[in-house]
Image (cartoon, rainbow, N blue to C red; front, side, top):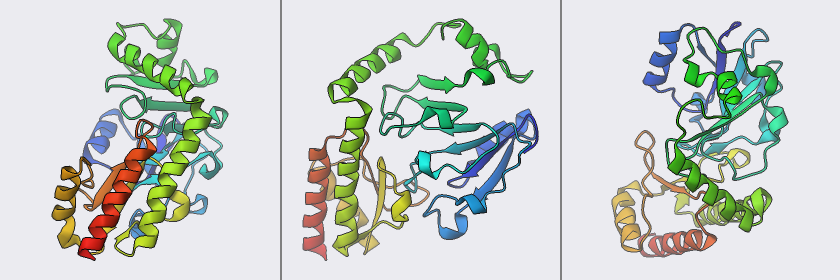
Length: 274
């Protein structure tokens, strides 16, 4: 990844359309590391990365939703170039030291509000460096100069986001919601690990608090598990089509009572089918 282009950490198989979009611009995307041989069960280690000091930036997704891998500030590799992070799936779920990043962006649709709204936090010294092919509406310097209103903003999405921010403050802010997320994730992971009937294959130090994939010991029971879950009011538990199994997404809005209900159902299902 040379000057004017970027590098990316591969947390999962890179989708073909991403490569196609990048190739339309130029030599834009280099995969700097992968854990494919480990089945994407952990984050890439610093010693596995091939960082280029001449790159314009280093890009990573800090919470990968398919396999359930999360990287906190402490897991960031040392980088001589600005770190650009996609935090779409865990923004506001945990405290973040924004000074560690050159740019953070996040779609609102997980923890903030409806789709169609994107939050961007960009370091001042990185403004004004857009490429010549960058559309004006995507030039952060121009957008910043116009108070994020160069174009008509998505007002309804911003209104809903404002309500969510108020709710978050009422919960005690990000620090309080992080404690709740830790408790929810620990409850579910601890049950899975002790069950003998379910398993999560992600290294404990890399497990996502937001997205908890798991497999049944006997996968012929998958449809029965999902059918019973729906009857119990537990929906959207089917895993991503590329990996199968199950996946519980326990974003900020999911109360711990919902996780307890899931664990109770999983315990009962295992007792009846173990």
